[in-house]
Image (cartoon, rainbow over all chains, first blue to last red; front, side):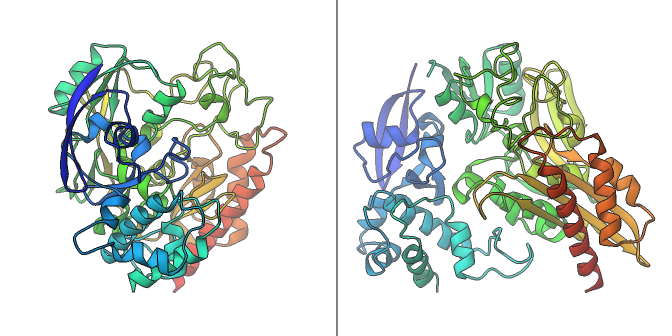
Length: 168
Length: 330
């Protein structure tokens, strides 16, 4: 069964007809040619498919494209190619050598941008000492908040450093 | 994946009407569990009714002091809400300990309650599972049993309920508001779930088309002193081996009030009534806490791979309650 939907992808309005079974990830990659969101596990366990929907980080492999009809989607490519040049976090990833093979990187960057907004808003995490307490951009906070993004090359220390630099 | 029709519900009443009249229909909210089940073949609906936009996504204080949480509130938003952080720290902490940031942004309050077990035999359609396919047997009973439940199990199913949020809600004695074709009804969180018995395919008492619309948190000032501790195999992004949600009120060194619920040990968030009863009026010491926890586990039936959960839970209950006494003294 098919449905026609509209997605705003990195500032460009795209209309497409999808099988209702299509995930947002597959719609972006296979239908719209947006290859920065990566397919890792396809079961919500690795974070490689992370994108921002309405400015919030989500897993594009676990949401149906039809459920995103009308939504604003930002991919890592959108963060890298904005008018003011690459997002500060994307630049920090390069400066800190926060990747090796690069496959998880687009998801890491999208997730990191979500983390920065969450820290800014004072949203607590499991690493926050008390739910009511202040939220600081400590290494423990960043590690906890980025735990949904796996990196098989093990670039974690540099990823934490990149997020920390932009958060401060 | 089996083809399905997708419709976006205008409001909750029409969603309930559509799903009630169609046995092949299912509600879709955040989708973090259901979309995975579609891929795995664990769920094969022929109609998905998307209620995400129709559900209340707000948190509000009711006239009598209770706090109402709309079923559409994202797990991340609930954890961060000022009322929840101030009055129900156990709930904020439980939510923050679950899943990942991305999943918490998508998952809803109602969906979190209705997520299904992560028992590997349930999620793998090539293995027997009475919950997924009634009568096929239980693969976990004599299989890999490390994650299995020890309380409330039957010979037909030994799966645990995976939610952290629900454990905190059980401890708080929260009430679930359910919209049915016959009107609204309230169900306590502890009464929402069924033990597996010989019909493990039914996780809850809800019937086809019943929709969770809100969760009401009780007006209980003393649960401000509450905590959630989750023991797992890595520090983040993993399900609980054992978790404890607790609130404690101490007066003159004795337990005046206590709420205790356990995760990772049972087919439902397990309100530890035996332990609570054993504690009221007693000295608030760690040895007393551990003794009460042992009383709760007298009915436990651990298997060969998961006997560790009993002492782990006893130790965790002792440690969490002790930390709340220390907080009280601080």
